[in-house]
Amino acid sequence: MTTQFKLLSVTAAVACALTVVATPAQAYVYSEAGIALTDLTIGIGTISATGGFTSGGATINGFQFTATNNASFGAASSGISASCGNTTSPVTTSGNDCGPSGTRLDPTPITYGSPARTNNDFSYFGPGATSFSNSDSVLRTAELTGDPTTSLQAIAESQLSSGGPISAAANAEVKSVTGFTFTFTAGVANVFQITFNADPSVMASFNDASASSGGAQANLQTSLKLRKNDGTAQAEWQPDGNGGTSCLYATGGLTCNELADALNLNYAANQSTNGGADDAYSRAAGFGAFGLRLLGLSSGDWTLTLDTVASTQVRRVPEPATLALLGVGLLGLGVSSRKRKQA
Image 1 (cartoon, rainbow, N blue to C red):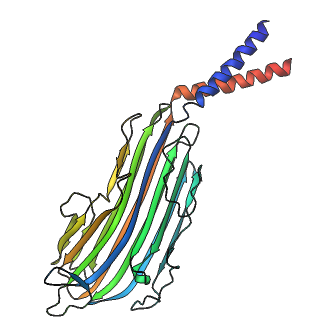
Image 2 (cartoon, rainbow, N blue to C red; image 1 turned 90 degrees about the horizontal axis):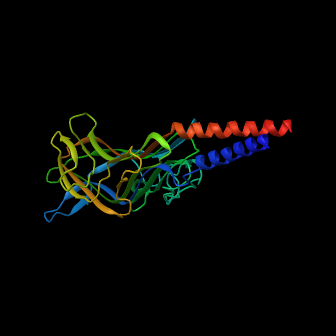
Image 3 (cartoon, rainbow, N blue to C red; image 1 turned 120 degrees about the vertical axis):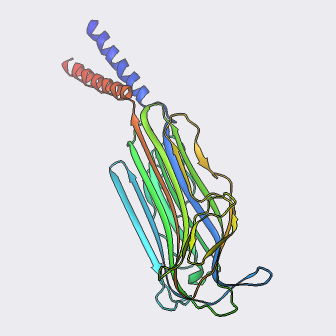
């Protein structure tokens, strides 16, 4: 009777331990970062007396698009990068090696865990009860390849729940580098202009009482840099949704004139306290308008760089009591097995 009672007690302890380890089902540390850009148009040209803009006066000498996806999940990690650009100089709309309109540049998504991200699925999977890490990006259309406008998307998403690895990270980036020559002529305004619509989403969430420590981090970065190749003039713009100018600097006679800056496209979300309020921005706000004019371009060779990056990082360290309880359960399984063999 005593032996049977001990065996039943150990079995019950095992069941209890395993039940506690598997709970809670909704524990997670989660982060996301993503952006969609549509109707992006870029021009170098003139401004009329009424404020209208007309492109002209610039010759495109070369361009290159690069899209990169990376993700890590515990000890596993992988990444992929793809690029396309011009094959003629000066550039013609047909002189490029980018893909067809709709997927001009489309690297394969990097995905770990469940659910798995399929190509060009830019929906958000979390927060929830599973563990995963993934990223994807696509350049759908591009003016320089003959499309009316440029559009792109990028997403990075990571989540850890109980029982999974203790760290994960993801990164997606789309970059465009364009070289051009601007020929200044008397009486012609020397202006660079960019307009587009964008929908950003950034979130960091920590909801895991079974973790002794950890944190979630998500970053969205979008920047435009215009630089004269001889180094005499340059400007950089990082839209932040504040309503004032978001130009970080403008030198060499350049002047920033911000036309629209509806949302923050440079946001860092962080959360390191279990049960704390999510750090989230524009998760369901929709598209906002953006626009910039840089006045004062001088004759010569210039380089334009447009870069958008979405990145996430999450980590969870299980509570020591949870690990100890799991050890009790495993020990109990061993004791139970030995008792059965002796019987």
